[in-house]
Length: 221
Image (cartoon, rainbow, N blue to C red; front, side, top):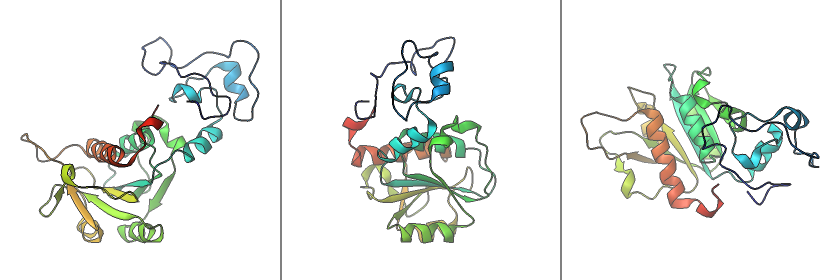
């Protein structure tokens, strides 16, 4: 990353298997700047972050990410304690979603998020109506993802740039109320025997489709 304050050259520590993830204590004189975390500089940085954010304070990482986030939001319904939410949050972080919305039950298993929820804006909505109101207030087009009659093929659709991508929970999929509220309903092309793909996988496919259509790929790490 070359656009952050005091940025260092990115390295492949996220991709190489080592005994310890991350980097050890800073070697040499400490760098100057408010974004550096003294504790991390002294003890090392073992967090799940890309190399350009090594040794940064969490608040500084979030602030820098806010300038990079894209104009799509992600929502997932959680009426039966869906275990895919952590995966959705982690993927939304990877693709720099503006925010993640959990609809229904507020509690969810954060293990799958791999601590990325600390760097991702999260919102809770008690019901679909509250989510729809948020979308209208922020001029977001609600796009529901479900393999149901009437769905348009994701592979042939241009997703709206200001979108709120809504996914149902594992099994029942998107609720009827959500389908009726959506201005666009899309499905993912499948060719095997299973009736549907995992909700977390589906979310990743659709987010990446948005990225391919609208993101500045030169800004990727």
